[in-house]
Length: 524
Image (tube, rainbow, N blue to C red; front, side, top):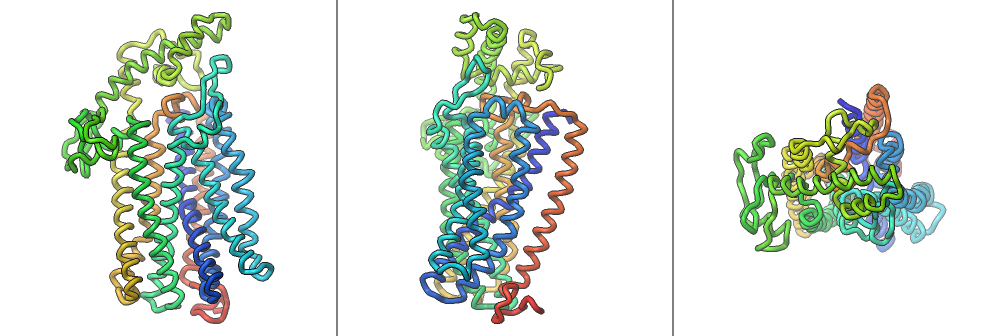
């Protein structure tokens, strides 16, 4: 594996590990707020006990999420130095705001949540709980503002003098439609994760006849909260499909395995066996018109397929090559205004020129002097254009696993919520067992969704602007392998610690609080 592939692998592993903890943190935070609000309104001690118990599990998960997340921010400087230089204005601002406001907010109030029960009034403590949840979600907002710009560059302008992207509109960066849609979709997925977590563990208690009243009230909260969240996930997922179709057409055709343009409105491949080598599907089952409606909000607008996108990107690569050659000439002679004009004329396609440049033989990010765009052949252009389409097979299947899991959980919440209205859910062992065994499903869906979002962005770090192959730092393969194994070992230990603590306290139940009114009290 070369330097770029190793850097990608390391970041992918750390990101996927980190995202095991994020959804549950987001989801449990506001579920705990809801439970404490019930205590605030009713004054019933059982809701206070629910807040404390589920809050304890939130705290364990929160701590592990913080530890695994800090590493990722450092990797942008250690592994992706040129990316950090190229878009530092854009990327640094939201991450700094996230640390100064969101992280400090949640870190301060999480302490008040755990240690302030006897030091504050009920209202004051609920405000501290709310601020903890708000800070966690605000943290996600600023991170996804940065990621949204990576998906759809907004508020940036190329500066040929500094050869980097300057931030010219913070408002455009903040209100980037990709960032807003990703934030709502991601947080809703987190709420679903938290709801399934509470629903599953509460079902386990009911099946064992353990702390029944505690479990029944927890089940009710999770069913109602989860139903609302799952509806939000579906609505925002639909909106994400439209946004991707408009701003990331290459990703759309990859996750749909749409090799050729179809008559409008295009069908949706429910099941298919895509072949990237032949650029066709050996077998497929379609829902007519659905993809056209999702991707274009129209019955008449056509969606280009992979082959059409490759042809379009060949032209962009040619224009980008002209711009990059002119940029290199301008860097050597800043009085060459003609070259500068060519750069600005082809500004929107410069990234495709770089994609061609770094796909040439002997061209690596750390030895750009070996990359001679003048020597690029038509075959090189065609190869680069084909590489501009994200890998189809992996994205296709990951997307469908995510969607199938999402709809299954929605149906589970519908049945669970309806059963709470009928007040007979505790008498339905099939429902309780289904809820319990669904426990891993939201994590599978979240990991697949994050995979599609990031792997579907390839071959770019900044979509259409900066190729991944041009973004890496000047590191040695040996140092990357060493740190990679170090991360795998450390993160595996952290994951084992998380699983041990979560399983231990989940089995013990509210008895772990040592209040003297539940089964499995701590002193036993």
